[in-house]
Image (cartoon, rainbow, N blue to C red; front, side, top):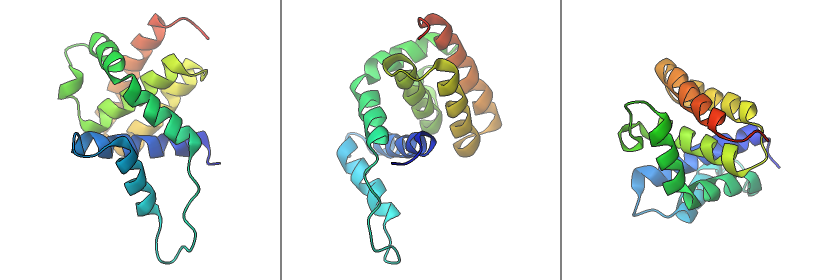
Length: 142
């Protein structure tokens, strides 16, 4: 089983692909496409299915309306629809994990900031941190 950090990175990539191509692409299709991209002729075996990635990606989409409403409330002057595809999916994924899993809020925020550093911009890191910190303060402590 991959490390949770890798699973979060994979989930972000799947959600990004889904978001860019919805409604034409289902989450299952996005996952299959992602795994197909990991397979190459040089690698004889397909990588194993990532259960944690699937759990958080599916959970994020199952709760997307709730998550987007929360993110709209906690991101000053920014609607989710106006955010970059990468930033909004980092935020959605982190909000889902913070609210619907047992992962501590500070861990979720640190992981989201790592994703923002890798896939977005310096400004996005500060933005993601601010939104998630505001959200974390509204969630009962686990």
